[in-house]
Amino acid sequence: MQKVIDKNIKGLNGTVTIPSDKSISHRAVMFASLAKGKSIIKNFSKGQDPLSSLKVCRALGIDAQFSDDLIIYSSGKLSTPITALDCGNSGTTMRLMSGILAGQNFNSVLIGDESLSKRPMKRVIEPLTLMGGEIQSNGYKSPLKVNGKKLHSIDYVSKLASAQVKSCILLAGLYAEGKTTFTEPYISRDHTERMLKYMGANICSDKNTVTIEKSELEGKTIEICGDISSAAYFIAAGLIVPNSKIILKNTGLNPTRTGIIEAALKMGGNVEILDKKTVSGEEVGDIQISYSDLKSCIIEGEIIPRLIDELPVIAVMATQAEGTTVIKDAQDLRNKESDRIKAVVTELQKLGADIEETQDGFIINGKKALKGNAEVETYHDHRLAMSLFVAGLICENPVSINGFEWVDISFPEFDQLFNTLTL
Ligand code: S3P
Image (cartoon, rainbow, N blue to C red; front, side, top):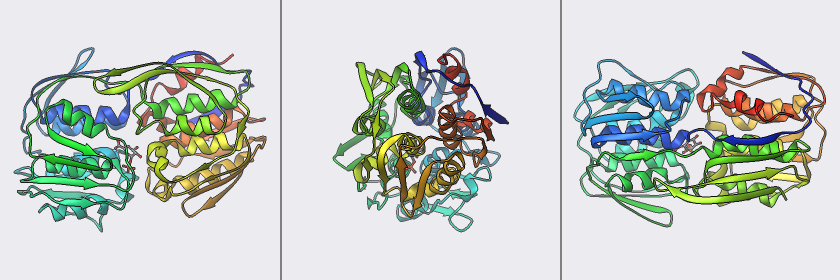
């Protein structure tokens, strides 16, 4: 689907309730499937990625019904699937499920779409193999044939700060004899640790190290907050579209995810947290944003895993910031749904941005008026589609975005919610 942005926008104004968090939705459906009893999941995401996790859990024999909420009944045990488990476009589904499946008493096969089949799986296959797991792959890419084995614990020190790798090992640790520990260079999102604890697992964290022991989970009610990664497009748009003032309700504010707010503040953005509370073990609040004169900054090191998915839209913000913004230590952006370093640079240059690719990030010279008058590509990548939409809002001429339907992977409500704000 092609989306044309030619609105001559005079500002964005109003209040939006941010839809459900994708990362937490994946975990909720998976962990409820592993837990004994009834779980009630409130505000489950309608994105295609979490729906892939739901589909995989159903193929493993789980009874999951939608009413207003997603209701899951489980005996705490999965059953042998009769078909390959289709993870669609979702790396989170494939990597977390590989950890769950490695310790089962049956074999299974995980498959994905064209983009997912190109993504690296060595990062999970290697540690799972050290735990006694047996995973056959296509040169460390999917399909993954997971032969269920009795697992043993490991002390794993990861070179990557990755919540998907961490979660995979912790989930395998749920089934392994002994204490499994996982250490990462910087802390990545910790939804797995929080939710497993809430559901009764024997798990504890100390700085960048998490320890888990073999545990049984119990069914719970889980209320999922809004996704700060979805809020990021409204934060960026509110900051760079003149005359804007937006309030974002019910946004997740887990400190392992709030790098985007810290980056926006560092750039001089008017961003304010209006109200903060804790829901189902996660911090949640309302965020107010208004148009700002942004300045450049350097984004590197420990903050990277806390804003990894927001870097494409931060690059868009940086085109409107006075000075040179440098983003580094983000080489794993090349392993996402697309090579996001190359894709962002290629497409923003088409719109007139002064942006250059480095091996591990971007260098962006602002403040630069974006001319637009171009056709841009999304590379089958939802975050590219939404970032280019935000860039399109400030272009002087129309922009056509090819493959805009990919937004449905995480944020099917995106277009409709933006339309409620335009003046
Ligand atoms: C995710 C972790 C991140 C992120 C992805 C979702 C998760 O990936 O980019 O969109 O839900 O655990 P990595 O762990 O590969 O950095």
